[in-house]
Length: 107
Image (cartoon, one colour):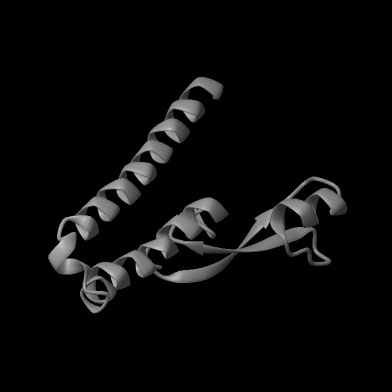
């Protein structure tokens, strides 16, 4: 099966049922947990803060492409969309760098 297809895969779990439910989310009677996977990566690929950050790009882009001109700020503050995008992306890059640094030192 190609790596890019979404499919179910049964992964054996040897922990107790309560741990199984908390780790896997779905528990069946066989003692396995079913997880969605994309290729070899289990879903969800992103944590909640990462998902919120990615979803925040949509309102930022809507503001930069339409609302900035609609509010008439394109004459007074023409640099504002670029500045907002740069700061937003800098926050994301800093988060990724700090998370990678944390994972490197804790593992």
